[in-house]
Image (tube, rainbow, N blue to C red; front, side, top):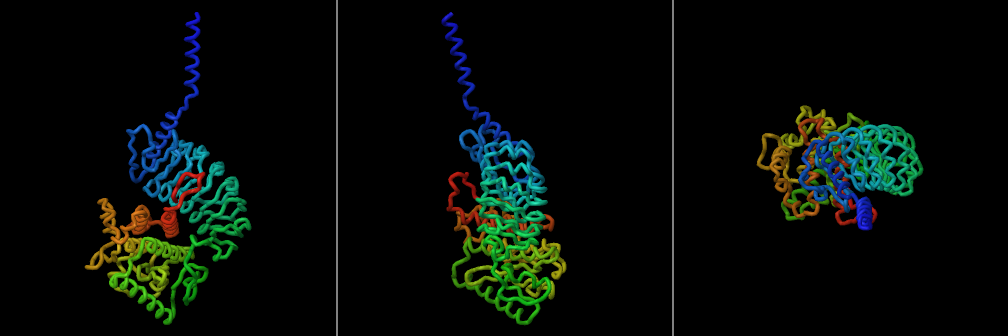
Length: 485
């Protein structure tokens, strides 16, 4: 009897002990299943995850802490389609979710509300649509939220006030309308709602924030000069003449070097072009230091911002002649976009071969260039900036190539490093950013206009790449999962 009692007691204690053993394995298995469901649900580039592994913790973009997935970073991997319930929403211990710079669309999955540990949510540069869902406002731990460059619409909800820990909130380049609510978020220090359809006045609680930007809306204030450097950073125009919409925007830090309608202005433009060409030749032929990655990326960003400002003035406003010789550089290599409007008035006067190298395939009249055609030309400019090769048309010359087609062929053969200007290969710490900027140039130079991103999305993507470059040597806050924007 005594022996049986001891055996029974031992079994009972063993069962109790088993009850309290952590179920980390099953939790990790659940996270693994959610990741595989995500891979099956979205199109685009194949996620190179080894499904034969029992743990997902070694998969690219996945970070674990103990028995759970705490970070998922899949930026710029060509994901497309909608995020269904049962994928990222099942990763309930996520602290960082980065799906930026993909082509995901539709509404956000409702079970994302289960990710109560989320601190960083980066969804910018996709095609998510509809109002910002209310369940997002239940994620009280959010510190960084970036929804820029999507198709979110409707009013900006006062529900953002529930996110009391929020420090950065990026909503620019969407379709938000109506007034801006009074967001009394004590920790908020970066707030950007530029290039939406907002109206009314800016609440005092947001005017006082150190980094805010409201450009491209019909707001009563604040003035443009209050926008931080990561908004539109080109300084005020130093010269400009003309009338009507071509003159609009010459003040307020958007476009410099725009000269239209006077002989004096044209002479000034020719002088500046001479300076630029002279600088190029001296750099190439006199052994001067070539442009660094930092300078090239800043030139790309400043140029994109200038074009974006022009496009924000109306759907019928385009530059019409984006090419490298119309991007002027100061002594400190600050970029200025010139020649705005001249193509509309008198057509192009440069060598046809050179001009055609930047011209979108659908353009037949150089005086009738759409905004999407501007984006194509900017894409060729980006590729020229990264490869060091001048573009030409299909007739070719000994000094140039059909740049978009050549870059695509090399990338398709997975010889990406062969594309870049050899001078850029020295900057190995920014290799990822270089590849992403190259991909952006390819996207801009897509054959069909509808497949090209808008210049506002392009600007946002370059801004993120520049931030990523500048933060390589900086660590995150101690309470956050390390995440590069």
